[in-house]
Length: 235
Image (cartoon, rainbow, N blue to C red; front, side, top):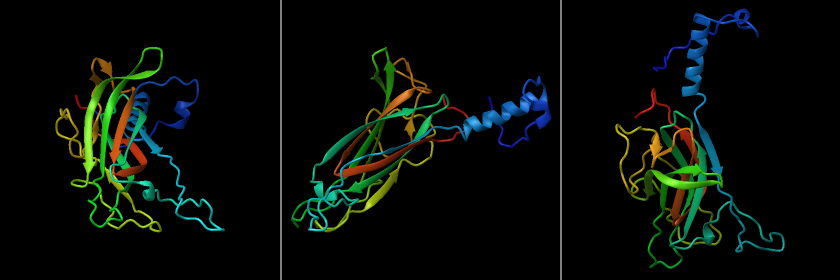
């Protein structure tokens, strides 16, 4: 069904009182308004703060014992990795998801001869199924993307300093929908995450999906996922 882009006024309030029988143009106008809301206002969105300790052992004094700073870079060493599994409730018309990642980049070591950190973030989508004992991953819906310093991630260039705060950066997948659904079987350059209608014989759209995230040489602080508006669901 095509969704019109122009707005229609709702029917006269007196014609829509509780118990009133509606028909004709009143029903048509209300259906059109609900369709527009479903495709725009009622799209899915979720925000995931990544909680972690900010205790800084290097900052202490008689007046500052165990003081917490927003930066956690000091505890990061080269080769540091972390993984997160997020659950996203898609809608029946969800097709592409934009991911916005807030992260803390690695930096150089105190040793001037040490190589630079190489921040990397991989994001994939897994189909889930609940057979009665809880959700389990049953198929790969999208092998996903890889963010790194060559395409989207920034590198903190300062030398290691116990008194220095790191920078917080943002990276996202963008909202440009590919012309054809992706078919990659390994992570590719950043693009919106794809939700096919089915994967491995299991429904994806309208179901809860798992968003698996692996990060290296960086720490993730926050992730936001949101449906991208498109006029009609792609095949």
